[in-house]
Image (tube, rainbow, N blue to C red; front, side):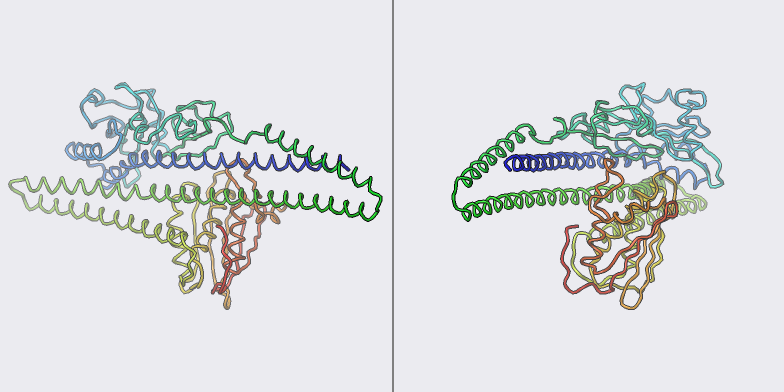
Length: 562
């Protein structure tokens, strides 16, 4: 009897110890994940805000059919250099020969450089031309000293013919200073690999390469034409508690309890009364059951805390991706607007300083001013649309207040907000929702349900990186709404269909999957929204989720932690 009690106590203590160690380990990874996401967002924002300055210049050259004069070229390059951050130099090479560069000081010898005759630079240039997109090379050592990232953007005219190349050199050292990038930052070791935008297959160019061998938290930073892989581990290593000390404590406690049980059994054996013996046995069993119940209660509380932490981690990761995507999308219209405004200012100043203006010059100037104003108006309208959509989605997700709302408006805002994420993954979102469907319920929960379903398809349905289409369709049947979210991806294996809504079930264990996304969706649909959710999938044929819920949510809904 004593042996059974001792073994049971030791097993229970070991289970609690390992659960506690697992909680501390996952807590440590969650903390590093949040810090790494913050570093990636700062680095991506700072880098892309500089790289995307060339987008407006490319549009200007293409719209003018390559008719770029020396005065216009130097004015545009000066404006970009003055307004950009961390720029070493920026140049234009029609027909692959560097013709204009800013600043001239320290770079004058580079004028006339012909890229096909440069064996160390031509492969990257040719990759940009053949891929018809910007390619970022580096970090590389610069002749002027220091290190730099070289972004080369091919320019194609309206008829598809190749015109030339834009080259922008970003000062890597200044970029690191601006972001606050260091091998040891905020209590974690940081390393980056993927020189020349080659991602996980590339070499380590920042930090200690041993970080990648210590089971790090990783995240991808997307570049034009490539990507970097960021990895981080705690400076003091992954923490899982003092296991030896805790194990010694519960062994001593188990031995003490076993000794007490043994003493009680000996005392009970000495008693002459059978009733007294039975009473002591009942009391001993009651104590054992109480101890087991307390142990189970503590274990359930530990699991609940771990689940809450994972849910908060997924919310933070989703919000970080949402903010980074909107910031990434805003760079293009703002860059175009800034370039057009600069050109407009210079053109106006030139007209004011000109003594005599012919009618043909005045008409040409008016055309330029009208075109620049149109570019500014279009850029501001596009930026306003992105900010408005993001503000509505963010406001809805920050509150669970009940109100009436139109489903097609929520889906439109969601599509605008997810556009950068879908574009990066090569996916398209299509919706077919009648404009007259109006719901009385919780728009924030509906937004989160749809966003989780779309992000689940992005993460799991297209593992090979191929393009695809995600559909959102809806119609009403009486007082109910039928909502379908489907994709044409790889589908779900039959063995997993019955488990996908279970908490902590994931096929991406150790690769960023916590197994709570679909469980959260199930709790939202069957809880506050008062509906049902089902899934239909075949391997290689895609997946379709069907949600049936009332147009008017239940009067009193139990809140859930989402």
